[in-house]
Length: 301
Length: 274
Image (cartoon, rainbow over all chains, first blue to last red):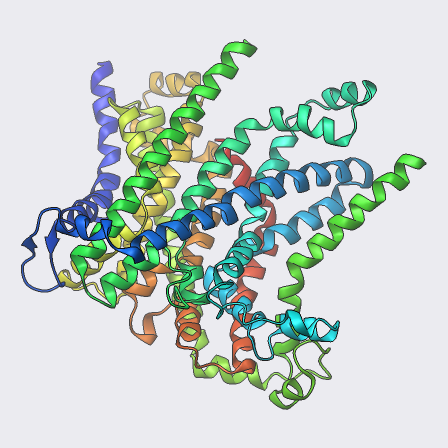
């Protein structure tokens, strides 16, 4: 009886299963399979074993794209998490002292870039950063810092850092909102007790805020790291991976290999490496998260 | 008193930081209403002397912006509704039906959710060509319904897993079958969460770039994001046009944000910590 009730529920999974089969499972297996072949997108793929992967191993552009991914992790996970924590704690203080309305407005300002399509954010910034007539260079000139004017996105030594700065702007709102929500769970008595003990703002931040919202910090770091490894739209719109590959990232690298060079097998190998990297990170992250949750439950109850 | 003075710098610093975040929007809005002559005479930092809307109008007509908006609304709206339906069905089987092997099914959805689109894009492109769906809005709707439902299933399954068992048992004793239980009890009770998902799926799909860029080649099918991204990528726009493009791209996002602000910020928090 009980098992029949369970089996009848399995039917509800059918539409989802079909959709996932068509959109995720089959394409993913195809992509992985194609990565072991030589294929230009037409005709039959010819089996080439590990040739694509061997070629990747020696491809400087491939390594450079993954190195740039690390920079993206700094810009999209590390910096927004650190800055978001300080901002969230400060905003939380402000809410306590100046009321919730001003906090809501400030939070909205920080969150706004998050709802913007990345293509639009790219248009806005490439225009602001334009070497001729761009607002940033004009501003520098207006305050007498002519010497600081740069071709922000066109200088190979600078472009990656400029993209990083834009990504911090894009990403910051996400950790901020999550951390502010997390802070609402924290028992205010903890802060009062710390204050009575003479702990200054920084100490309270370190010894009360940080440990209390550790679960949120874990989740945000994991999600933002994965998002950083996937970044595509920003690079497409801001720099197209240039100048001279200075801002190329794995997703853009595989995109151009697929659709511009039509080396489908090679592109599939690039995206497979990226996928394995992300899945490994996701599994480790989820494991750590469940373990942390178990520990917490064990110690509290 | 001393502590109040001590606190004000924090508020001021926060306001300055917030201002820094919105400055790009202000600059875009300022310059989108300048005429090309005014722009080249005064540069990007001056306040506009009047309201010059021809730039916006020209751009609107040149890229057939109404059409792009319509495409985006159609695609994002369909995806939002269909993906919520799919998520509910999946989550119902996992969270309340407790089907066998549900831990594995759930793990599968989580991993599908983290999968980079680059690992799907070429086969999806190839298969949609074979199926005659390439360069149709339907193809994008199908793909994103499945992808968004992966996240929806993950979130809803954990919400429904905590659904009071007494209600489920009571309904079963009253003779409700699985369908009746889903539509008459579970869906009405979880309506707030479904609302959050609907808004999220809509905004996320609106903002998607890579897959629509690959799948929607013809002008008539492109979404706002793709059309603007492609224009920017071609580097053919002058300053006035770029500003018009930026403002027209920002406006829908701003509208969603103002309309859905509470849902969005609350939803983010719910999603991140289950």
